[in-house]
Every structure is written in structure tokens, then in C-alpha cells.
Image (cartoon, rainbow, N blue to C red; front, top):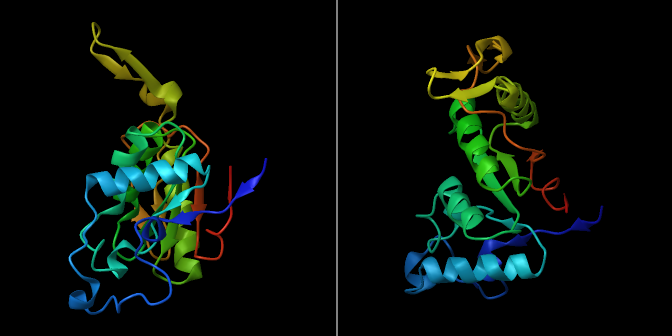
Length: 199
């Protein structure tokens, strides 16, 4: 297994580099706002280079501030076949249960092509959050799926695990309602660990 270094979406959109306008000054950025074609070209370039596409801090630049990372990831994962994406997720803004559902859905859309980079909070808070995500992801194993429409039976509850988490920051009762994501995918804790993603 070799390592490949992520390429920043902002870089592919031409929003980084020496002489960049001050991102705090929307007037200095000019009229550029990426559209669907710009985003698809950026994804195609990252895919052709066999490098993960790191969404980075979308809110940190006026041209990408209106983009939402999980929605963008869904669009790009379903329009590419090998592109790997690194989605930022702020532990201070997403409840773990909602994040686990959204990320499991993305992992189903692009099996083996998703990594999440946890941001916000401190290292302990991110570690607890990652633990909660992992517990939720395995709470509804694929073996629980029955999908017998004629009998009206869609899952076998004996396979479902209830993690019932009561941690220092988050408490979660019950199992996820999305089947366990196909894996593997990485949960990265900060910028430093996001620099190298196994290909």
C-alpha cells in the first residue's frame, strides 16, 4: 500500500497560492464562485492524479463559503469511480448521531473512498467523537438486513447492537438506522494526520 498526499479543493479551483486576496475581504476575491463544471473539473483532476481531494476549510474562502461538505462529497462520489475525498466535520457543530448517518450514507455512495477529518474541539473531544462514530457505525451490521418485502420484514433486530453511550461530552441511546458502512474509511483527527491517506 502506497501513500498519496491529498490535494486541496481550493488549490484545484485556483483559490490558493502566493498573492491570494484576503479571504476576509469578499471584494478582493472578485466575481469567481465555482459552479458545477468547476467542481467536476477539480474532481477529475484529483482522480486522474490518484490523489484524495481534501475539501479543507470551505467556509474559509468567500468563493466556497456556500458549499456544504457532505452534500458536495455526495455529488462528487456519485459522479466519479475512483476519487477519494476527505470531508471536514466540525465536532462542535454536528451531533455524532447525525454525522454517523450522513457519513455512513456517503460511505455507501463511495465504498472505500471516504475519509473524514474531525475539526473543532480539542484532541480529547475529537477522540471521544471518533469513538462514538465508530460505535454507531457497527451498531447496525449488514447481517441485520433481511429485506423481505413480502413478509414485511426488513431487518432482524437480534443483530442490532445498542451502544448506549454516556461519555463526558456525548450521550447516545440506541443504534444507528443506516446499515454499517462498507469500509474501510479513515477518521482523521486534525490537519497533521490528514496529510497522508493510504491509497
